[in-house]
Length: 293
Image 1 (cartoon, rainbow, N blue to C red):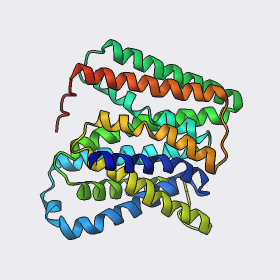
Image 2: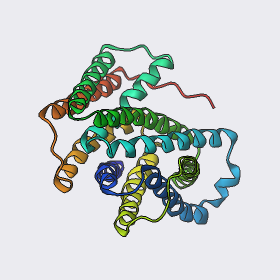
Image 3: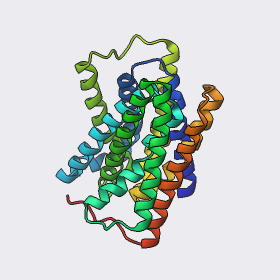
């Protein structure tokens, strides 16, 4: 069952990049609508079947939900903007470095780096340099997109780790309702701050927003949030790596996106490096220490 859900989630997140890249609307507006609609879609069944959980929430639950929501809002702002500046394949690969970011964050929590971790991170870092180098040769705008995608990956790592803590006590429905709802509040404030319109788009843009909500937010994010209760955040991030070739393939088919040969080399290095990181940690059999409440 978990394998089926993971496969469904990979399809959802892989399709998100091409859909958002093709949606002609401001990045913050797309992020707001997908989380606001996602909160409503997940919230209705949660309120009907799990409404007793909401009054029982602890301070720690609110804290982890708030951290996850803030990180998710900023992740979307960075990633969706990156998709409009650089290629879907490059942005997706760089944002999927969240697995490496989680490994690095674990180092700050007391882990001793093993050879596999150092080797894998070095390989992934070289992949980043290769992609960024080729993008910089194409245009400074693409390089800025690469930087935003990298930041989006770090924020995705925080979102995943905080979500793993929240899911220890909260059901999928309750957590996603609160997280997506709080995330949409942060995003609407950002839209007001930067004077980003939330309406007045073409019908094609609204179709894209609805598609990314159903496919990426519900089928992608919500599935992985469900799996966080039974699978570690690092393993979930490893599964998400399958998004990289999936997004690149979909972008090539539907957006006719062509990449320099060097970019493909960078994608391979990132995938290989992250695989070494996860495999090495799996062999070590060491679990990350629990974060304090």
